[in-house]
Length: 146
Image (cartoon, rainbow, N blue to C red; front, side, top):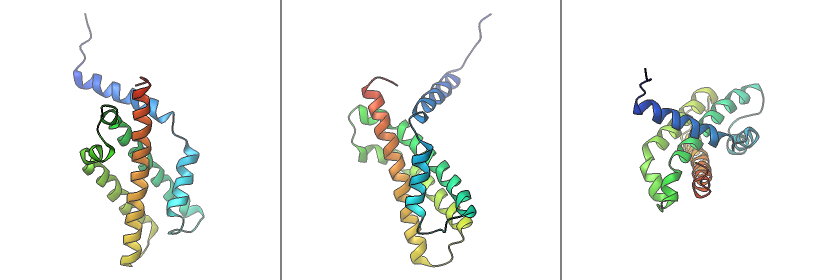
């Protein structure tokens, strides 16, 4: 008897395999350094900052994988801006999630200026890792390593 597999299972398996390949190119040291560069002026160093760092690293990885998922469109000739419009809602969700996480655990306060500045920092952070994943994925497609 043959084992019956569905197309959905095959797609999921292929996606997981591709994500594993992309994560091999990602360095945890670079992720932590990026968190400290982006959010160090909002939070003090210490044990509490380490717990915030873990959440930011998780969002960076998700953003990186989202960018790598859309890298094939760049390979086929679409510009970066056109591809970003394809995943606007997913990227916005990551930015909002990071902002909510930082405002809840960071206890910034009710200062609108600080909150707005933090939101723009979250946008910049997610955008940076999305572009990093997009560029590396595009390179993998050009080298036929996908």
